[in-house]
Length: 409
Image (cartoon, rainbow, N blue to C red; front, side, top):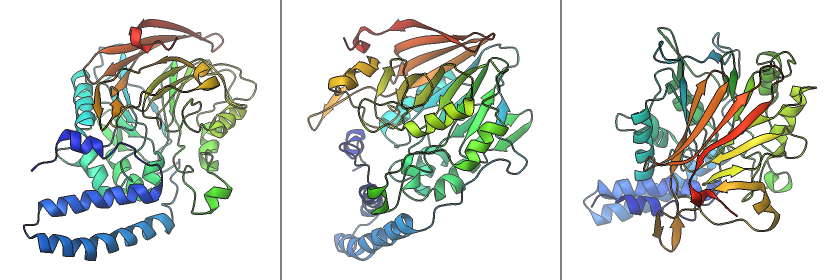
């Protein structure tokens, strides 16, 4: 009997964040496929003990303890990682970008979100990290590259960031299978993505995707004593300093950061280090930024704030792309960080209240960027805009519309 959408969703309930658990989930997927393709119960059991357990042990040891894929940075193959924003329709003065995080789960929900993205036909699509369960080649194929995969490739480009799940298999499939499938369209030339970070820009805005995934996973035992801090590697820092020129005081364009890991969180650990590195690179430039991230499987609009010595940021968590969406409230002072939060319940599975998946549609027109938060039923959950003052780099923020359920107070 084919696996139902609900059965597949159940696999992601109580999903752990350890490498071992997620490797086990991947092996379970492979085993279940083997069961479907095998007519003899004896052969199934035999193969489970001979191939599944040994295969899991080999895959786990090879991925967990083996070397990481070499870090890829710019310049690479003549590419600088900085690209001009272009509308796929030259006569249109508006540019659209679809942002999805924690989407690549191959669920009915992720398919529904991807099909909705396709209906809007954005110029660019960006996946902001986490391919479940461990960013293995088969998982990339099922979500992105197979003929049946539902990922929508924008006419002007499609790009990807790494999360921690891609690094559970040492980033090998991310660098070897996913990045070659991602691209920027420049005229008649399609340029494949060369590194796990990038900058899209025009005369008013810079959309900067940063890599927090590569340094998000440590090694057994070592990470207990020294937890990963998701810091930006030296090559990425040099690129932000020398190529993007983040600290140029004459550049007053608005800045939108994208990352997988949260700069601010009311639910799990947040990561101050990337923000502190960015603030140091900005030098004497004191200005707010817009920052989208995933990792937490929910939709949260945070109050403008800072973390550690990082920049002032309009922080947005959009980790509701394809996994079961969490709706629980934080407690204590963590609640004070939140301005709006989608706590609507779409269904209940195994006593878990599951929220609404969705994505963000960014629209850039002149010095205004609008963020339209759509759920999988194509309802506008929240809409806001920022206007960049090109004389001083400051931002004017407006709420355009909000569902009443988004309020937390």
